[in-house]
Image (cartoon, rainbow, N blue to C red; front, side, top):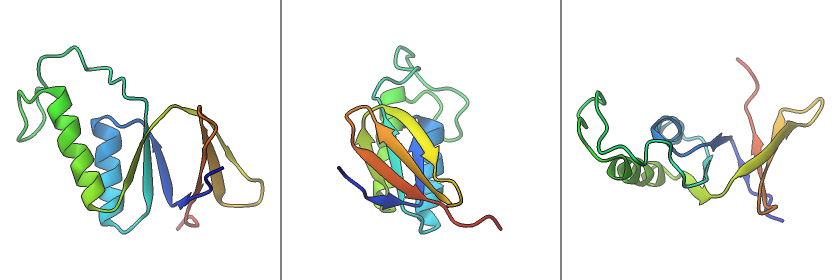
Length: 111
């Protein structure tokens, strides 16, 4: 059982999830992105209305985003998150992937 600790676990490696992971990585947070590898926009010929990337293929956009996340120390894993729970009286959350390998995330206290 993998019990690696992350500050944040993001479920979904689309543009929004990768953008959040990049921002968190730049803020020196440890972040794990769990992605099933089945993007909803896969059939689209291109992404439109995305600043500086108009017309880029969805796959290329995700590839660029993944490289950015990795460049800031983020971790990407292919899998499906099946549960997440918070320990009562604790700020830690536990998420479990379909393969049965849990990723442990601990959040900072609210400001």
